[in-house]
Image: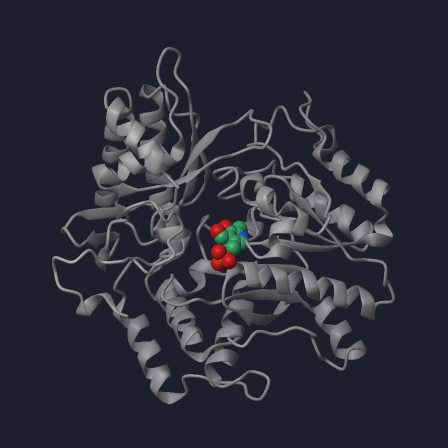
Length: 462
Ligand code: PLP
């Protein structure tokens, strides 16, 4: 029965299965530009673009109009039977933005689905190529690829994996590089000083489980939620590519968070000059206006599927290529170009970085700022003699102050604890960046005084 009919004074049962059933969430009733407003009229500066998805801000009329027009024209046509003009056009535009060779686009709805599809396509490609043993996906501890069981198996979010570990596929994992201190990276990257041999670790895994059993390697080019905008050494991804080539391993780069300009390039792999076999995308492709995701596949895989599987990828979702979601994606891509969004990311990303560096110099709780474009992050440090704070609790306090960041928990070995990701809409302007940084500073200051509310917030967090 609906809540609406209940008398105003009667206790109303909440029928929503919230992420945290005990927590009281503010009610979002309106959104415009980089702000979300709750039912009390409070404004929140959305410094995390929701879940790094609302990349174009809220209330973009052109995208809404395109979705409405498509819904009237053809709201749904199953892609097993039909293609639609909007699907053909959007695929072409995405292929044009991608590195050369990645020319064919498969659509799904969410990022997890896209990664599931990519891992299955890699397997089918090997089967079709006469390598039937290849089935394992090598993932990295410091990467997240989604919450469905396959994606969770390949990902490295220990907190999300633990309860479900008996259900996960036994995929091997390697470590992901720390942020780029160029002078202290692994020997394989040719720098003096030595930290950890990331490439050597991957080689050891290949030797241990056998290249003949490894189907794919999956990673984020710049790690979002698991490390908080960590950028690897410039040569790291190239070395991974070499190993994959040597051992017939499909290289899947997960650009669900980084794709479509977030890091100042269309795709984050462009920072490293590497061409993956498959790029997965999601989130920003529609700017969060509709669930659309997918994978962009290299010709060398597509050609094999065409020839050996009669062109059939043995996979599919009901909502693959949903026309209304594609209309949102197509209109969002137009908006990106017409409004020079990429240029804005570069300019505002530089400005935000300067402001955060200045803040970091006077805030002992902030670790060094890292990241690219408008995907920036820092570790939330403990201060001797002061209380420890989780990034979730910190974000709760920031929300009270009027801004939403993206908190994260970091590494498995406890070396790095809590971090904060800052990922505002790519359309943000200086005036809002100034306000965001002021709220961040206010919250960093509040942490040391407001101990009581902090305890409550920590309990409510998550
Ligand atoms: N891959 C990356 C890098 C992500 O950041 C996410 C979500 O945060 C996913 C995959 C999963 O996407 P979704 O939540 O849309 O399934």
